[in-house]
Amino acid sequence: MSSTREPVVVGIDFGTLSGRAVVVRVSDGAELGSAVHEYGHGVVEDELPGGGRRLPPDWALQVPSDYVEVLRTAVPKAVAMSGVSAEDVVGVGTDFTACTVLPTLADGTPLCELDELRDRPHAYVKLWKHHAAQPQADRINALAHERGEPWINRYGGRLSSEWELAKALQLLEEDPELYDRTERWVEAADWIVWQLCGVYVRNICTAGYKAVYQDGRYPSREFLGALDERFTGFFADKVEQPLAELGARAGGLTEQAARWTGLRPGIAVAVGNVDAHVTLPAAQSVEPGRMLMVMGTSTCHVMNSEALGEVPGMCGVVRDGITPGLWGYEAGQSGVGDIFGWFVRTGVPGEYAERAAAAGQDLHQYLTGLAEQQEVGAHGLIALDWHSGNRSVLVDHELSGLIVGLTLATRPEEIYRALLESTAFGTRVIVEAFEASGVPVDELVAAGGLLKNRFLMQMYADVTRRPLSVLSSAQGPALGSAIHAAVAAGAYRDIHAASAAMGHRQTGAYTPDERRAAAYDALYAEYRTLHDYFGRGGNDVMHRLRRIRREAGSR
Image: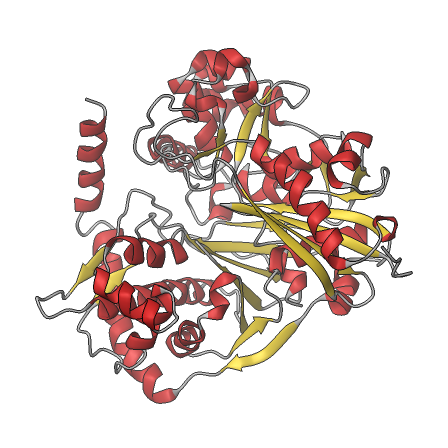
């Protein structure tokens, strides 16, 4: 291999189904090579690995050794593809889905890797979309409001079942012995950095958004003890660890991690980060008022502001949580691409697959082509995008999907279009909640795998009545991680400077069409009627169905 004689960095994005490594030139953010490694165990939702114990509804687990295989496989492949020498790599940055959390021993050994605990579901990684802790989240929220906890409004008034506190309380109540064996309750974003540099530091992003770290402290021992007296010391005993600023150097690459990756020991390893949040600098969106939508299986909406505001139903606002020196806001939709994928897997006749194959298209492309031939509203349908619950603004994972208007004449492409529209309507709800709370959204920027669907992007511009800019890279999180690695390696003074040099954004790639926007306004009004009726207490049927399902599954 020839040396580039220019420094490069490696960004590693740990997603829901795979990990991706990208080699990036420090001077201009050029992506020189990339590689993907699919997790061997994927998402564990039905039974534990090896034909083990079956899992109840709403569980979503992962196996931590799959993450290490990304380091062993994807990183060397990406470096080889780039054509650079490993000697030119000056730093490594990582990002993770969140809240993805695991119980470990004090040295970081995952409990699921202990032979005697391999058949215990709570010993495994709980993926972000593990929603089985909703009852615990409900109790946490009720108690926080009852006690007037000052931090609850920083999270839109409700903590999610996806986050650390609810998942830990579920562990305590359902497997107290395993809870006692847990010496560290670790975000996967921090665990992978621990494996790379041998140093366990918590990043301010996950600590703030997923573990309720506000104004220099976690929720009090009194609050935890009021939930369960055994829970009183949770943060002190299992969570508290030095916190590090985003873009900081966590440590140097260890000899073992150097053998895994083929990189030089001692190079900078950046502090961990979250996949959506780390993407802001990649899209040159660290400046206040630019809301970035990272669109994939779910969508995370993140933005910076100079002001602190309390937005109902937001996932959180954290000082320094995205970019040092600013208030970082997060909201999101739990299901987006997952919903489209579900419909393609389960709701499309075989003849459509045959036609798609004959046209050289996959089913998503084929259905999109048919859907975009329709006029707005011609299908007579409205859908609610709650197939994975509602993250914002209702913060309720007991809610479920809904389609209204089906007839015997309804075609698959019409349902598909209604599902696409439902996610755009969900984003509009979030944008309106921010603006009503005094947090202006001046520009929408899109990133993620769904950018390839141009029809969907135009729909978002029309529905939200805003120009839509796009990240000019298919590797947003990995590029963002690489930018943080460059800062950690000392190549730039801060994230702002690194973003300006290494990020890529196409401004105003999609602009709203007034005719379609007006038609979508009428559909959106119907969406809001259903949204509030089923989501704000008008009809509790979705919660009742969840309880019935849960009771049936426990028999």
